[in-house]
Amino acid sequence: MADLIFDYDGTVHESMRTYAPAFRDTMKWLSDKGYIEPKEYADSEISRWLGFNSTDMWGQFHPELDPEIREAARKMLGENMAMRTERGEGSLFPGTEEVLSELKAQGHRLSFLSNCRIHYMERHRFVFDLDRYFDRFYCCEEFGFIPKYEIFRRFSHKHEGPFIIIGDRFHDIETAVRNDLLSIGCAYGYGSPDELSGADIIVNSVSEIPAAVTQLLNK
Image 1 (spheres, rainbow, N blue to C red):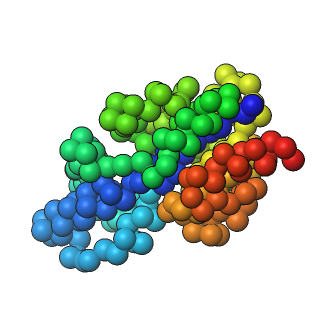
Image 2 (cartoon, rainbow, N blue to C red; image 1 turned 180 degrees about the vertical axis):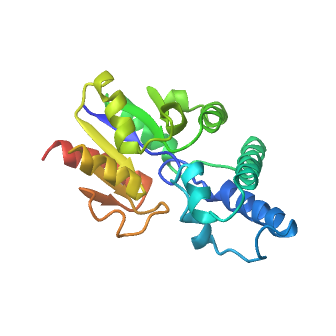
């Protein structure tokens, strides 16, 4: 049995369903106010920010904006996503609930580790009843927005191991590499092939995760 450390957005949650429209609404507000130039954003331009914590995202996306404007935009985007999630516009990837149930039934311990804020994590716990699957929940805001690989070091003593990191972005694979852990890269998510190149196994759908876990543990 293993401790499976799951990323959330792009690994469990099909985030673009709520993030893309919320992002476009926020960019329109910024451009309508004259803070940025009007622009049409492709999904690929939007999804590249999924997996970043919101502080890092806004610091890199439009660093020229006044900090108060960036913070207003950050809150607006988050509130827009929350509204859409509570209206039922969000979803987990198809087959996710069955896979998480299967992994739990096999005796694995599942943890949620995301670069999100506390209110986002708690809302999704409620909307998708995530406590059915995950034994522990961790998010970057609880740890002062430090990198995921450092967050892992803060809580890993509470777990038995062995550990397998499961995620779709470089933050996840970096967590595994820097801590000498096994990893599963989720190519169906929002990361590039380069980001996942250091993973031990690549999966192309959620349904492939249980077999990948078994393969890694049997090495």
